[in-house]
Length: 109
Image (tube, rainbow, N blue to C red; front, side, top):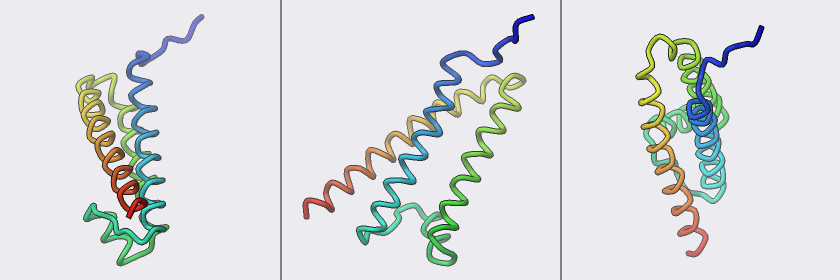
């Protein structure tokens, strides 16, 4: 008996894209902070100033893992959740491009 795939290729791709974009955000933030730049997002910046940089990265991993777990658990019952993931991917792509542009500008100066 074959196992039925719960999600389409597009949905699996969107999940992997979400994870990849968040990893790119973490990597670009790590490079930026090592260059002396500050985090522009309020929540990670607050966590970094009151806690530590490592705590901020742990929070990011927790948040991404939570979103993925919720999607995997609830997406079959609430298929519109995928639209939120698609929108999030578009926003995160913009964030990563912005981070890379900031890094490029800081590197040139």
